[in-house]
Amino acid sequence: MREDIRELVAVSSRILAANHQGDLIWGHSSMRDPDGRGVWIKEAEYGMEEVTADRVHLVSPDGNVESGAGTRHNEYPIHTEIMLARPDVGAVVHTHAPHAVALAASGQSLRPVSHAANLFVPPDVPRFTKTADLIMTRPLGREVAAALGDRNALFLVNHGIVTVGPDIKSATVTALLLERACEQQMRTNAFGGWPTWSDADESAAKRDHIYNARAISAVWDYLVRTVESR
Ligand SMILES: [Zn+2]
Image 1 (cartoon, rainbow, N blue to C red):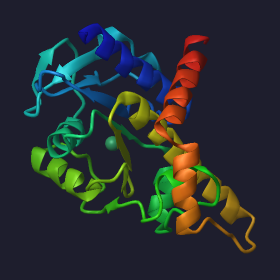
Image 2 (image 1 turned 90 degrees about the vertical axis):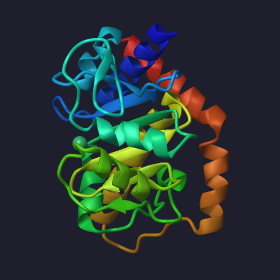
Image 3 (image 1 turned 180 degrees about the horizontal axis):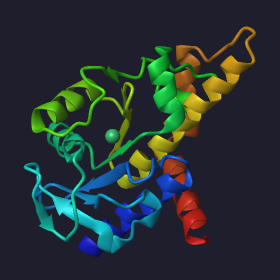
């Protein structure tokens, strides 16, 4: 069981890296410990593409490494405090996805100019603006969890993104889709002109048609195949 969790977190890390969400040694995904001891998350000081199961360890809400070795990420409270606030969440991703950081910093709202953003809006993706510094304490982690609310994604403005899901598949695929949505909006804006996007009814329909649980699972399986064939 533990080996399965470590392997899943490692594969998630490599998928995120292969899809341009790595920022040198920064960025991480995690899974909830089934025994309630905290989160399984990659060790610090490695790039996400370097993560194997033996570089995933268990971190408690107080920041102790309870199982495994290595240095823990300073921003572990993003993961542990969201898990505590959201019983429905089984996995959390935090990265510095470049287009998402740029869009959030621009002050523009995310608009569903292509498929991807329909997973998120409407309503607007929530934004955490208290600080753009690292989330290194439990109180700050709680504030991030409060800003996320019951949503699937959060912009940490001038810093990065947080995505969540019931499992590591959905949290990881959600992170990839948020970045794709922001990149598509940047391309749309680059043309100038008169951008159009889906209205609320169409967004709701597309969310169901395109990003239902079965499709998200199939996307994950595809992504696993792509990293395993490298
Ligand atoms: Zn960060």
